[in-house]
Length: 297
Image 1: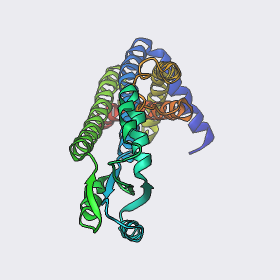
Image 2: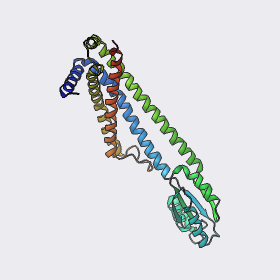
Image 3: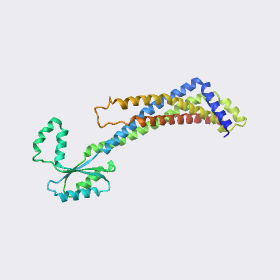
Image 4: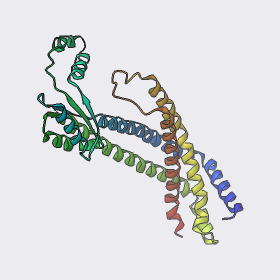
């Protein structure tokens, strides 16, 4: 494409945007409203996914060692656990450390357990973490079958519910985002279609004098791109300002230590880029889909 032709398309697309001011405002409003919803859902879903991954990564297996196990037995058990392909890390915890952790976790009530410091009833243990959290139950069952293992605990009910909830939340989130994107495309397509109806004759005349479909499409491509960019500005500002406040205040999450939001930088800027990209895409697609039927002369 010649530079002069491209310049003409850019000029025509920009002029059409301002010439149809009311329809432009309506289109920008449709894009803005939808992108605010899409942006909020993206922030929520990506942070939920981040929190879910962190919770999954924190899932551990505690293998209690038989009280009668000798040092050689413990070393052999450790080697056997490390030999499991799905195992990532293995940490040995003495029964003294277990007792200290128990006392500390129970606060004032834990002081009663200090009576057992001389005659510790707890077991030494191995803390095992898998490479993939979904392999936790599989690894736990393998460890349970090994010699000198008293019992294995990994909070099966909690883990099963956690994995089920995470999978459900991710799937629902993706469905909602795609539904919002299709809604945005539908809204802007129908809004732009109204503006194009007024230019139906103009398009027909251009076709009759020999203008190619691509030549006619380009100004609408530019117009859709402009609408998408303008419609992205407010959602980007709302998301960035709102997330900056949320990520730095900690007001709503200070009581839940396990909840750690994604850091403002670079997350907010990545979301801004995604919103801008989505805005441009739905603007261009909406414009091109609307003008397509009028090219059949």
